[in-house]
Image 1 (cartoon, rainbow, N blue to C red):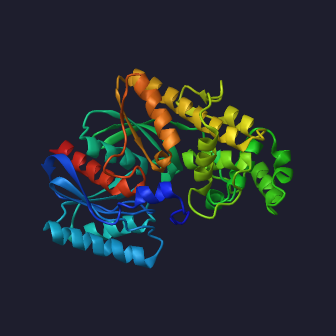
Image 2 (image 1 turned 180 degrees about the horizontal axis):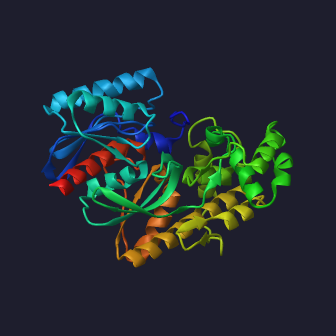
Image 3 (image 1 turned 90 degrees about the horizontal axis):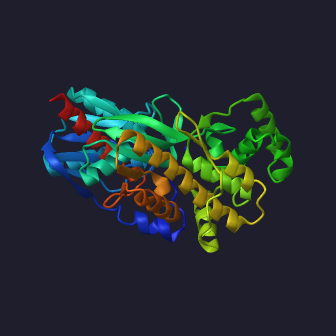
Length: 387
């Protein structure tokens, strides 16, 4: 897990500054009281009462004992403040999260039903809660990582969400992570994996002379040893940053992505790379052609701008195609990658131009602080379905 240290960046600070108090979200109808225990990073908890969802202040990364104690206290405080006893408890799909274990223990002690909600489903469900959408909606959930229903790390997902259920319609082509979680902190490793995938593995050691492990990583890729794959959009940003020489090792979460965004803003708008992506019949969106161009790009600012423009164009094509095939006009954009204004605005504009209604975060953040709200919404929909 990458530590949830906030970067010294005004964009992020402004977006996180309103998370020091509880947030109340109006729901379309009254329902049973739900306790939702949130994500691992940027954790919040949510308790519903009647037609309101009360989302706690930011608790933070559950890797610390202080944050775990704050989660416990926040649940007790919200339940006492609202004078409710939860009737169902929701948690993330990942069994090792403290929030999952807390939820299961809390429910077991009280004889309550529990529901596990997939991370990206929760991202989109949070937007459904904000907009009171109960009809089918397409959701683009773009972030760093969340455990998928196939037990692999997801993070670049196109979902069809309806009520308490969802279907995975498409996703980003998997990238390999040499060394597992460590690759999320060291973008050069993901860039090395891309070079290997492009048939340019022999370049890895010379491309990263400051990394003493480069030769070892090349050998790991050759043997496919400890190189798990992920569909994460965050790791795609890392790959681009590593290939462009923007960032080889991150000192805080999302540093590489933030640096790419700043470089792209400095350069200004560019046209997407023609044939910069491929979409197969299973809805797998592959940006290998774009990454191959970035590997040989010596202008970091132009490369960053080209990455953003092509990413937005490829995602738009994938989404518009699915909207047409499924007869859906609502598209929800959730996940931490939508802190990126360039991606958010470009993609939103492309989707709106095709007649789609774009739902973006308003009261809540697009990131993991909204996960508890999404979990609560799914739990409420599951109860409604059962009635």
